Image 1: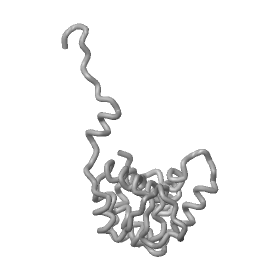
Image 2: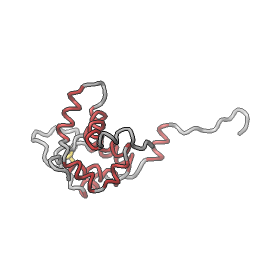
Image 3: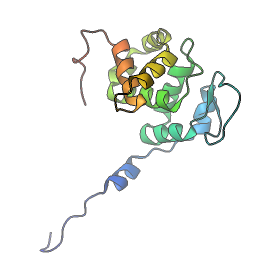
Length: 161
């Protein structure tokens, strides 16, 4: 390096773009049995099973973590017992973040789907919103989901990357 010249540092924005994945959210949603709707429009009818009004959240998750990760997030919600209507942005973000921070959960395979069958995602979302602790509901949901998925002895013993 010559005097007066500094090495170019990547900006956080350029670093994020370098890690971005290509993701066709419509294809992934179709494969998972999810119908996408424009989140900017107000729909008068109740949300039905497999209906998602959060395409921006899906796009963010897919670009950050890839199509396979997005598909797993969608499948965990849609294919778990009683949770097919819980395709809210907070829930999608919480499940995605949980899997990113605790990849050992993915290794459980079908046992992870069985564990999600015993979780009422609507109740977890409502509880997170009611806590009003100054954190986004998705962050609180991630903690509540982790507490429900890991045995008490395993919390704090998981590997941190």
